[in-house]
Length: 340
Length: 242
Image 1 (spheres, rainbow over the protein chains, first blue to last red):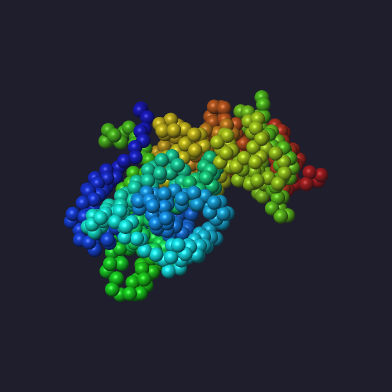
Image 2 (image 1 turned 135 degrees about the vertical axis):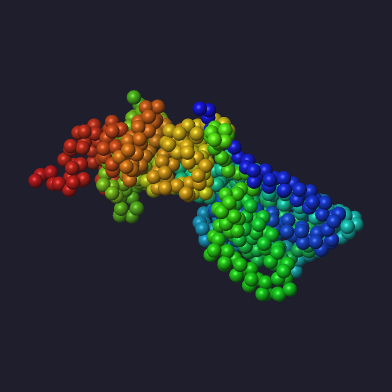
């Protein structure tokens, strides 16, 4: 009898890869077929998708339920403004440098807040975000409490004409979402990702099997902080204006993101994608109803949490045993292959 | 034979409750040792101290010629200590294969096909190979107990700590388990086994340690220990003087 073999791809994942590539090509050609408003909306969708993937990696896998991700969104936004206005950098490298600075900053923050567990950790992250908001409001050269706009000369570095500028910032948003999605995918597929998934399910057993939980969580936190800051930079490159309240908004950059991940399916890679689509579908249909829209969002969140605690993707996965991203290992036995 | 594990004056208490009281013993390389004691005697706590889940208040632990008292749980696993939990802690969202694979890649630092082949071997040995693609959350209690052992073995331990792995098994299953554990021991893995199913324990171990209230009561050759007055008193409640 020959040895069983181990595979990871499934027919569903191969189909998903093909469809994903087609969708990516169509989206990449967006500036040639989409209107201005559509492109703005799609850019926002891409950036939210990226934020949701990052938050899902932290909360869904590493158990780091942060409600303070706005700290790094705002930090990334402010770094874009500071490094372009005072550092003379082009916006794109400024955003990337902002990511590295956020990574460096996240290490001392982690050593502080990792001492807190569960709900205390969540509150701790929020406190950190408030400290960020209050600190940036003190910086008068960046507009203090009322904020500032990105100077026209810097905006033009993204594209001299309005149409090129819009196309370029669309591609930046799309590119960032694809990079974040792929980074999270390859991380989860790696040896470290397997360890992280084990931590998600049982920290006690994971540490007993040789996984350094603190270090793994720190890695996730640092990577998540860097990517969140980069996305924050891109968000405020779209908005062209920043203020402490907008940059460090818990509603915009954390509450909506949590909604997306929870209704989509926390702790799965597919969940944030589904959640992002549902969130924007709701937002676009209910946009005219004002605050009523937030009430509907809350209601949807409650119903999903009660009826499908693993989110919409959890329902689908349990029923059809589907996996679009081939993260699982499947053992194939020789007799399966003969088809007997 | 040299001592693989040396526990010296190990103490731990939670407030007034003493779970380890200046416990000292040695486990020789290649040995199979049984630990007996009534419920709440501190058996599982002793495992938690050896694996680094709990930090001791006093005393030292040496493993493989190295002091590990201040090494964390993950580090101790990498050095070669793996255990099965009395109450299984499966990674419920991962398949049986993935559960064991993570032990092979993290605990035993194996890579790629070496890790995969090692895991397939371990699953075959523990009878879990047909369940390889099943999510651990869908396993029965007995299968979860087997998975505990499979995962521990996948970490390629020098010292395997088994915590009440035979409880609830049928006679036939118990026989299989004994054979598996004997085979693991014969392949050179040192075993320390906490078990209430005494006949299973005695079929495997060549040395017994009895603990109660966190204290080592006695240790020695299994037969003699089982006939000793102290053990009879602890287990049967018989006053030896009457």
